[in-house]
Image (cartoon, rainbow, N blue to C red):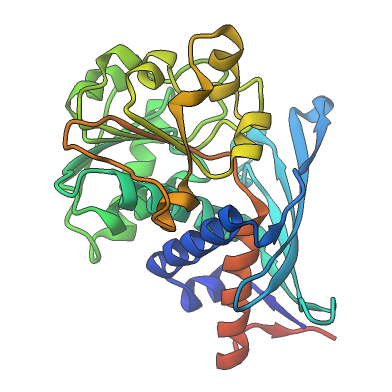
Length: 330
């Protein structure tokens, strides 16, 4: 058994690899070749937190087994701590023996960025040049990296209610990506300043109200709803969902049980269930069509599934074993 740190994972696995691994996970999930119970959420109201346990098994040509423990503590950011601390336990699917413990915080950032990257790759216009990233928190850097990996973006706008945090994020992004991408970054004081002129919108917050004005969304836009993951959270404006030509989710079971973005308008009748095209895995499997026109508005909503963690972790562990990377544990 070995321990794999963030630095270990970064040396072993690229965003491109993670996007492909996520596509595989979603493909297998849609085919029914997984056993993924809905995650268990434990509220910790005294500390404005939640702790989530996500176990699962993924079949296919390379079976994988694992469990992730992740906590969501938004106030950690003020303490210079990760807002989503996590640990991933990878097990040998054939024996049930633990094979590795991974830094689940970075693994979560990687696979969550990658699933948005997978959706953006499959749904955004090929000629997309501009994007808006709302919420530069703990998940945001890999969200940005994923967009930059799948599309040759010239400019990405960054919004946060705390302008200093947005500006600090831009400086980190310039440092992180200056040798890899030629994209320019700029902050905005309101997302609605640029909603009407960007090709991609990615919102990754724990908001309980929409983060932008959906009536401003223009034909051809692709939208990713990444952050809201409970029935009480809502990042995506109903107007944008109503204007969408195609809406995809990571898993229907998870989205319809946990995504307030969809559950709220479905409950009020503002959105019909038939407006949801299906799972992104079905698009990966080419069972259903995606974008049909440059003017289509497309939406991807993810609440996360352990299948993503398990497949990505399994591939990382195999690479670590082959390259003898990580700390061996007794």
